[in-house]
Image (cartoon, rainbow, N blue to C red; front, side):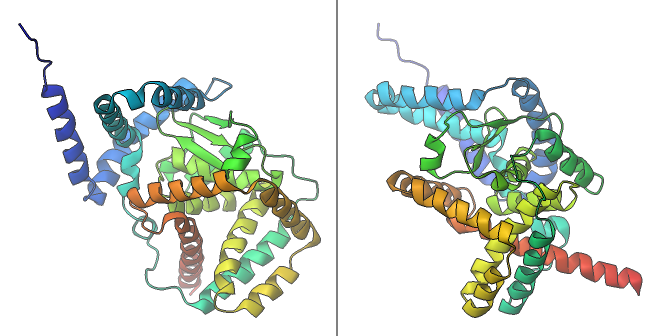
Length: 341
């Protein structure tokens, strides 16, 4: 007698996926029930399991998955479809719903609306001044997890949900290959680990680390992680962290300014300190050395991934974090003036 495998598992998988798609349309509910409740336990649990291990468990999982896809996945397309569906569901349950939480302006009470060229010019000048101000006296050799944790501990006195415990912050296992792939860091939603490309110029490490930790704390969108990482830097006592963050935001702002006032943007670059010019020259050599077809493919692929996950601007989503920082400074300055009055 021919035995037919039960199909209820596939029906259940489809039903769960549909329910996920429906829930994505309710950001307030996701913020309350998922991010601040379910995910807070998931994130702490995953970091508790993987954080003490000195190498990246997530990288090993990616390598194993890649091997399976190449050797076995293409042979059984139906099985591949099921594996991808389960992976999609697990991705969202473990972290991905954070893409659909309330926006940064809603969470922090920031003003909405178009940002003018004059506002960007003002913020670029502010970031330039701060970057020059926080230039470290000694060469940057990277950043330790204790300095990153201190930044978030200080920030959590104002926003309790941003307390960073336990930690799980590691160097990527892919080494120099990461340079050709063009990434600075990444978060593994299946293991809760934050990885950084330690082969990048050292002055970039602090802000990348803050960004990846923000992903660990439930800020999935790149714009959101950029903003939260910047807030953490503002609460740091480490000059290399503040320098890295202000310089990164200056580059975003000055590039945006270039489109409306190229002369002002050029003058800003000339006002950079010698140390900053040296660091940027080092990064230019680094980028020219490794930029190529693989980097272009990864950029194209990841831009599509971002659009699929509620970030229609693709790779330009990173820029929006600068606009949030701009509005945040306007918001805090306004509140300070009201308090003074």
